[in-house]
Length: 174
Image (cartoon, rainbow, N blue to C red; front, side, top):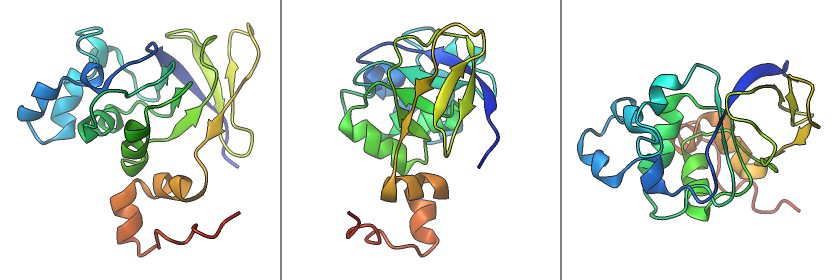
């Protein structure tokens, strides 16, 4: 069981599409996610990445990552260091791309999370986000489970497969 850590919430809204995460034309700038990370949410706030601090967590509303199936949207979030990531819901393709990139995802009601506020993040076995200012209730998190959890724990799909672990190991789970 890990010790809780203090995180600062970086909140974006509902229906944030992959072109808002990173404009598709930016893929031509470089194949390196560490270069592309500087364009994260540039249409929402041009200086967004400059305001991200180590240990910040990304918090979104409904349908995060909708739109096109650009894997670079998940890749650039992973490169930004925004982890964990919590959203009310994720678009299906983005969700799979995020797991494949090793992003630590949870589902939760994010309506009471305040941008730039600090929270105590409790991972397994509690999975809770607790406001540090004492205002509001704990937010229950629903993390990924099963094979998706194993892939994230390995650092993504490529490290998982390279470790020799089976992608079919969870097929017969209840």
